[in-house]
Each structure stands twice: as C-alpha cells, then as structure tokens.
Length: 246
Image (tube, rainbow, N blue to C red):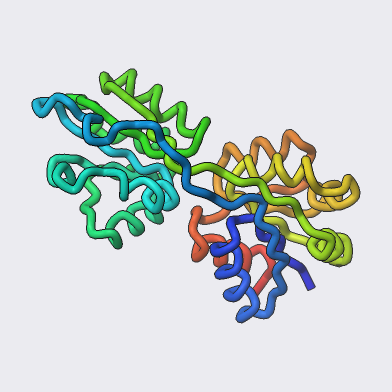
C-alpha cells in the first residue's frame, strides 16, 4: 500500500489524513512547522492617516487573518477594503464577519492577485498581513501599481523536527507519495531528515500545489512531481486518489 506523506501544518494534515483513511490509504503526518503570534510593531490606529486615500488590507493566508484581523481598529473596518490571496483565506475572513472586496479571479498566488484591475485604479495606502520575510513580491508589485505599502508581520513560523516514528514510517513504506504545499517545508525536511529518508522521498512520486514548488523539487533531483488540482485539502484529496488509482 502507498503511504502518503503529509507535511502541511498539523491541523490541516490531520484533517486530510482522516479523509485518506476513509478512502483506505494510510498517511504519515509530518508537519514541518507551526505558527505563533508575533508583535507587528505597527500603530494600527494611525496606519491609514489620509482619509482621502483608499485603505487596503491584504491578507495572504488564513493564519494572517487569524493573527492579524484582531489588530484592526473596529472604528475603521467599514472604511477598509479587504483583499485576499486564495479561497481559504477568503473563507476565514468571511467567517470572521468581514466582506472580501478583491480576490484573484483565478489562481492563488501573489502574482495572481496583482493582476486584478481593481488594484491598478486609484491606489492608496496598503497593509500586507504576513510572516517575516514573506510576500515581498506582493509588496513590490503593489508599490509598482502606485500603492504606499507597509507589511504587518503578525505571525511567525516555528520549525518542527521530524520524530523517530515519522522517519521510521518513511523508511518502512513500500511505496511513498509525498505532498508539498510550500518550499519552506521542503527546505526543512531536507535539513532535518536523515539522508536516507530524504533520498527515499526524492526517489518517490511527489504532489505539489504550484509550478514554483514543482520546479524547486525537480531541481533537488525528484524523479516525478505532479501538480495538484488546487491548494486546499479537497483538491489534494482528489489528486491523491487519482494518482493512487482509487
């Protein structure tokens, strides 16, 4: 039986593992990082000083909503436009009671969002909610469109090391399919896994959610890298079932 290596954050990996179990597939849950709140060092009360300018808050992930929305002053929420990267972020923002004004018509990357015509008209002041070092391309793209941009780094990634049981499960799998939703997870797995386990992953098929991750994994020497139908767990589940013949 093919074992499915899941490297998403724990909650998402466990959810997908349960769905795979119901389909008769065994999963190895190996999250490579978790998230924690971070002090953004921004005075949100004065983040948008010019009432005559458009006010834009860009949320780049569900975690950005989880850790960032609480910082926005309630008396300004009605004057702020909300933009999101991806359907999962939209769902998290809407579940918090906020309307999404701008989302990429197709795709789920920063580049896709920057193609939206609404961002090119009458640019103003924008806050991008992200983790340290994240979404620089998005911030740069908004600047090129004429926006004044600040990044509110409201959460941070905390690395996790694979445990002995996870390594043993990888090495003991007759057939393996690894699933990757970020380059960060790939780099951490390469860093922390024993060489034998990492080589086994590269020699087995992999499923990824973007061309960028596919390119990176192939450069590392992966033998077969397939693109998933999308970034969410339902997309990954359909892709896994297709690749395993279920």
